[in-house]
Image 1 (spheres, rainbow, N blue to C red):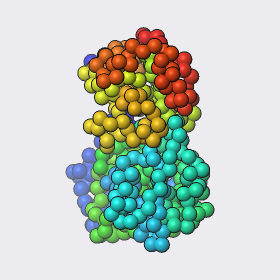
Image 2: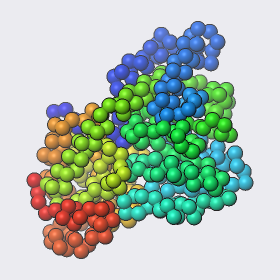
Image 3: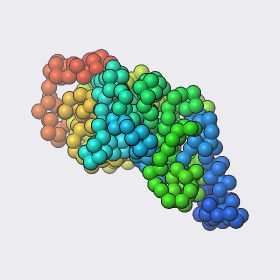
Image 4: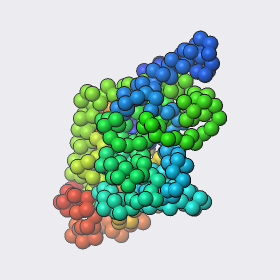
Length: 420
């Protein structure tokens, strides 16, 4: 039976059209884009075309605002370090408590080893940023605020357009990690005050090891990687022409899907899946901002179970999902995102993220729904929280009412006692 892949926030399958676009640049058009002969000109022209395709995906005003990198992590690091170096009098950084490790690990390193002050803004039970705390943190020492466009675990979308405006009022720069948002919701960066934005090709059916950083025209930028003059002197190193061509093609296809009804189709699949899970499985609820989420992301907490046990059962059934960020897999501790949202410990350990794509089908959703209730039931039986498994609905309601209400979900919905 064909496997079901519901871990598209971790990575996506490369589109065959992307591979087809890349192949000639491994063989026939192999020239170094910096060379002046015809072989180099072929690669240079292809990179130029790809830059324009990525520009179109994010709605940038100029193609030269797109700097190709090795991925989202490099883009994030480059943006933050450049902001600090360009403003030596400002030593404060602002991030949210639910940023990707590519941001959090780097800024904690800067604070620990380089004397930078990091101000971490909390979120509420739905994963929404504390706007008052954000405003209070901004000041004359703030170099940059870096807040993700959409959270990779819950799909919660942040008001980055407003956040960028507030940062500018304080004289600070604003960067957003849009790795999960790009290709899933429309982005028109030229209509915002966002200074820098990170992208990754493998999240939109492109190749791994390729990313981009949008750098607003006129912004002073200090490169992270120095050497040659590639990327207008903003990122040294011989360009990965095949990967960049693939990124460009993936961006073109993602833009076409955004213009169609594909996003709504994915949302419909996700919403049907969630409704049926809540109907068939007791003591579970959806985390995140249910009103402002990516259309493909569903993070469901299965109380009194361990997510890793559920994932193992799904994997044996040929179904791929995740317990959160792929960059933090292997940890048995609750996700830092769910901890920041104050999801109770016994709930947070049972969180499973299902992330859909345009390639998923109704039949695949039905197959997951057929096997998931039994998998969750078995996980509860073997979990360390098994003593809670026989608790009455009233008992669980008493244990978790604040979390259910914080997530905007009624007790009837989050603690439904029927099994399919």
